[in-house]
Length: 217
Image (tube, rainbow, N blue to C red; front, side):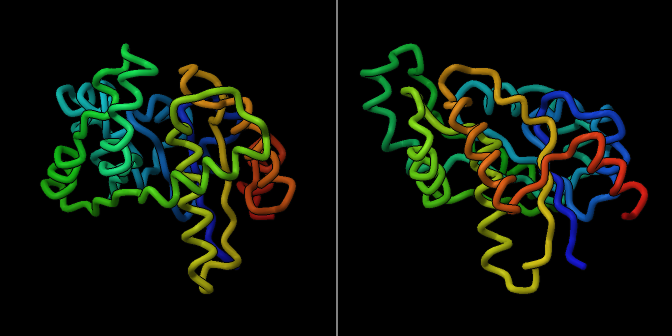
C-alpha cells in the first residue's frame, strides 16, 4: 500500500478531517497555516508564497516561530524567482497596484529553513507554466497567477509520477475553498481539481473519506 499525502489548504475542513490528516504519511500546509489545530497538527511541509507582501509579512512577523513552521521538515517556495522577475514589467503596466508583487524573498525563507535544519525547495517555473496550460481547458477569466495551492498540487502529482516507488500513493486535498484574491483563477482551478478527482489522481477529503481513513478501511 502506498503512502497518504494530505495537501491542506487554509479553508474549512470537514468533520473528522483532523484525525485523518494527522494519520497521513505526509502533510503539506500553506503560508500561515491558518486552520492548524482544526485541521490537525501534523505538518511536514509548509509551502509559502515567497514574493510580494505575503512573503514580507511572514518573514517580518512571528511566522517562523509558529507551531506549524516549527514542526515542519521542509519549506517550499512556490514562486520561481526568475519567472516572477520576468513578469514584473508587464504587471506594472497591467496592474500598477501590484508594484511589489514580484519582490523576491526566497533567500529569507531559505535562511529560515537553514536555521531550523529544514529542507528548502523552490518550485520550478515549469510546474507553474504546466498549471497555466492545464487551466486553459477550463476557459479561465483573466487572472494574474495560479494560486499556491494549485501549483503545489501540480508539484506533488509530478513528484508521484516521477517516482515509480510512489505509484500507489494517494493524494488527498482538504481545505480548498477556491475563494479569495481575484488575481487567482479560482473557478477554473476548482474545475481542474474536480477533473483530477474524477480521474483518480486526487481524493477530496470529505466526511465519508475521512471516516474510512480513520477506521483503516
